[in-house]
Image (tube, rainbow, N blue to C red):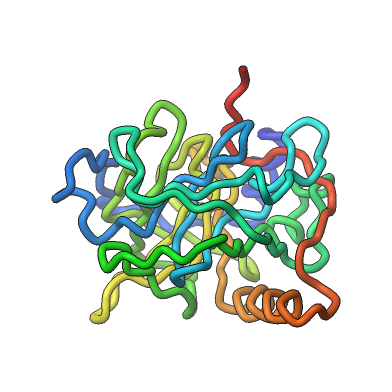
Length: 264
C-alpha cells in the first residue's frame, strides 16, 4: 500500500516545489511551550490513536480513517472513542467522550488508497460535553488551503504519543483537487493533525493530515485534505442528525492509511 501511494504521489505531484527552510519537529513539553495549542489533542480509539483538533467547544476535527479498525475495516463504536485535550507528558487537561461521529458522504474504507477516497478522509466528532475552559480556545477552521506555501502542523505520533509536537514551518508543495502534498513530518498517529495557516487573527485549520508517501525523487511526503468545502457538509450532517433527519454517523469500510494503531 505504501508503494502504491508513492506511485500516486509521483503521478499527481510530478513537479513539486522545493521545500525551503522547514523547521525541525519540536516536542511541546512544558506549559509555556504548548500555550495556544491546547486545542490540539489525542484521539484515543481503544486500539490506537490519532490526532484531532477542537474547532468548537463541542466539536473535534480529524481524519475519517481513524474511526475504523485497521484490520477488519469495521467502524469503531463512537462510545469507545475519547478526546484528550491538552495532553502533555501523558496527562490530559480534559477528557471528553465522543457522542456521535460524522464522515464525509461517499467515503469507503476499503477504497481508501484511491485519490477520491483520500479527498473524503475527514470526520467531525461531537463531544459528550463541551470543553469549557478558557484555556482551551478552539482553533478556527475553514478557508482555502493554498497549492503552495508555508504552513504549521501540530501532531502526536509514534514514539511521541504523550505530548504534542510542533513544526513551525513546513511547505505545501502542490496538489490536485482538495489533496495536498507537503514536506511536513508526520508519523503513525499523526493522522488527523491540523495543517494551519498563521493569520493576523491567529492560526486557522485549512487541512487535515491523511497519509504519507514518497515523491518522484524518493523524498518522504505527507498528504493532507483541504477542509474548506468539506466542513460545511460535515456540519450539515451534524445538524441533520440532531433533528433526526437522514445522515449523521456513517459506517463504511476501510483499511489503514497513516494511523498508528497500538497493539496489545
